[in-house]
Amino acid sequence: MIQKPLIILEIANNHMGDLIFGKKIISSYHKTVKPFREFFDFAIKFQFRDIETFIHPKYINTNHKQVLRFVETQLTDKEWKELISFSKKKFKIICTPFDEKSVIKAIKFNFDYIKIASCSADEWPLLEFLAKKIKNKKVICSLGGASFSQIKKTISFFNNKRINASFLYCVAKYPTNPENLNLNFFKELRSIYGEQIAGFSTHEMPDENLSGSLALAMGAKIFEKHVSVVSK
Image (cartoon, rainbow, N blue to C red; front, top):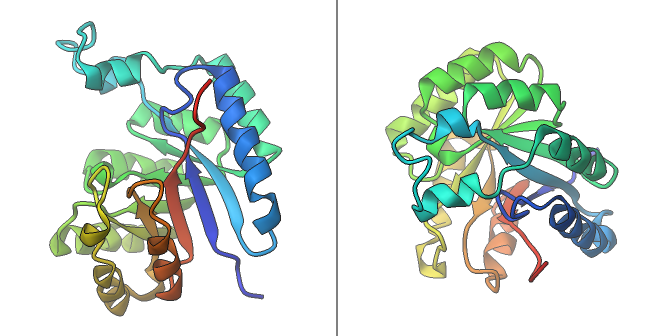
């Protein structure tokens, strides 16, 4: 039986630290994807960060916008438990942990997949820690911004650890203009690593509709897209 392509709906910080709004996003996309479940599998993806260790002490109490976007959108463990339980009834669930404490937290919540962000694809202390903890958990890893050498090292790492990892071609530019998507590089990576290059993590503008279709035609089976709804 052919496995259906997996579409990952990435919430990231788009829940705005608001449990009710997070549920609204999930409910909205649960309704949106319903007509397509015959052809695709769908998952909701969250991100975990331990703010005390993730943000340098020098910056944690500043008004820097890149700090505030994490500090102001935190959820408590109780809220996470409720949101994840709510999501499990509607989707497969995936988590990107950005630090060791978050790996433990993700394992505790029993996500279907662990996702490694592009920025962590060569963060060797984190990857070594994750490899010791995840056991038989499925892993998806984005490769945005990585050189050929980095990609080779990352894929070799997971192969040597005998971890079931799938890798996503990704352009690490927010947003990515269509002329910068360079999907031919996805084909080139597949010619080297085969089915391990399993999909496409997209960061283009919301009204760009062609790239996913092209990636699917090229053999992609996993797709990742940031999602939200218009307002609270």
